[in-house]
Length: 453
Ligand code: SF4
Image (cartoon, rainbow, N blue to C red):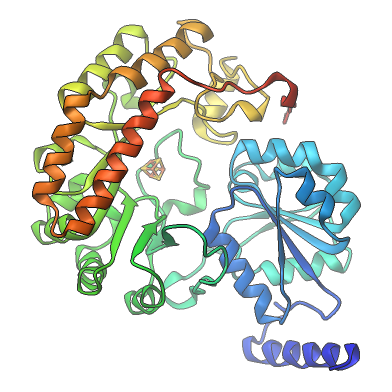
């Protein structure tokens, strides 16, 4: 096929899609979209890839943190840049000149631009900023950018997941052990440190038949990336978990245990299908953060799943005693922790409050890495780091780990499930222990201070 014929074919496809969806959400034949990501939420990457492929274009993906990758990128029309955490923003600032030299137009979206769109627009006035869920409008935004409309801030309408969900391209990034999928979006808990944009407060679920259709095509290990699956109707979860059990598939996800325990049917299904469940540890010192994931509910009625309790360290309300007390609670109850240093994202309620009181120590977003100190505490930076290490080292014991392994062997419905659970518990507990000794604090030479005000 000649170039012209190929072009013509693309035009035809473009016209067909335009007619079909009766919108102008279509890439013009001159558009070649490239996708730059930094530890992208791979579902978003796959949804965007699906949308762009509909127009018969093959997007190329570059890693935002890799200078080599970006240098190798061929000059092109549009770069779609996904910024889902402050570190990614650091890389964008660091590499912006190279990106601008390669790409005619920039479209920046993701979690951080959704939280602070005006500030991001001020930092990158030549870019178009995208707020919210991208699938319905991304093609129109690419077209606008190609047409020379820059410096715009777009706010996407909330997607009707029941009727408009686009199944992400399963062939994109197929290398991970787990296939990430989502059952729905949104969480009503309103934690003050939460990095989800305000539009995500409403809980929405996908059509279960479509979820099953998607999961039928993929492997046996599913990672649900939903912020809080416990908020979905029980009959919905029963249908999905029941399907997974029938097909011999396993899942990992995040939620609050209370709602799941209240429904014995779901709790049983969970015991037979869930590899690991991420929930929260409610530090009594931090009640005002409204962390409601409630990991302790699980302890009262443990099923076979591997439960991870995420816990914050280094909030100004905490002191040495309260943190050592927390480590004791973990030890005595044999909880597995995911400890991270308190680092609220710019734009969250906590960040703004702490900023006003002068407690945010860092404008250098490379330090928002879960083990550096970015918020001032009464203990000071050195002591806070020391306590972080102590908690990681002492919250779990070898005897406790052996008990967990025995519990999993006893409560798992198959050898395979027991094996995956045991490997996960050993891996995470070992990682925690090592964090108690070795922490690679950010190297000074890659530090780029970023003032976003
Ligand atoms: S429970 Fe999680 S997702 Fe929900 S508001 Fe709190 S931090 Fe955000």
